[in-house]
Image (cartoon, rainbow, N blue to C red; front, side, top):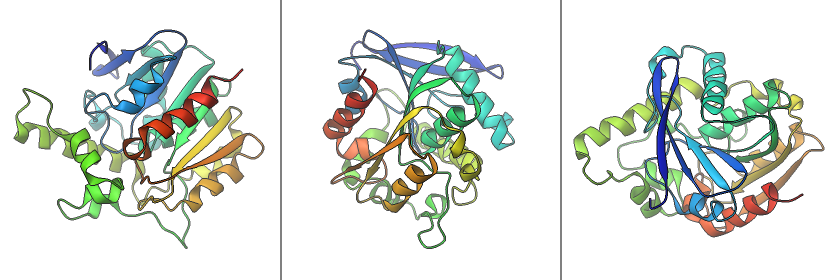
Length: 262
């Protein structure tokens, strides 16, 4: 966490944390199922070339106010408010992973011109009856790490209680994040995003772990097809749903090469 700065902004009169690291043109990041419990190596690598700005979504670690968001539109507008409060001025480069990827795609589809380059890492939002998403909210205790990452130890290290935080209190924080993801994605991650993806105008990179057990890798091509003509697809080997935790170096190489071109 060295050189990571922290400040707070307000969304719907609730505090949300913003972490930043690096210099140069800002690169915004929306985290996944567990939020951002700590600063990961993936963002460290991106911060070598850009100023990475990572605001916490309401209800996820560092963010308050998920209980005032009742509809999917509430979440989309809260995400836009959060990005703008964190300093985002169009056009921005935006990365979203998993749950954050869903909201990043929605922002790009609805707020035309707001996003310049869009990176979606295994986003929810579409539904394929032949390969339905795993129900991440119905997993038995202790099984989530192996569902969300190819390397469960990477997930466990990422979500371990920060120094000085009571483990019991930290369990509540992570449970609240899971509740928040359910508010956004229930049921089974189908947000009817397919009806809006054609509106995405931003150049888009779709990144998927080739061993994703939550959303089959076939969803990558599905997203690419719906964002016709503007989306490239990159498969990340030896990686699960939260692919940058499994393979941070290659994930950062793919993303950095895309957002820093031209």
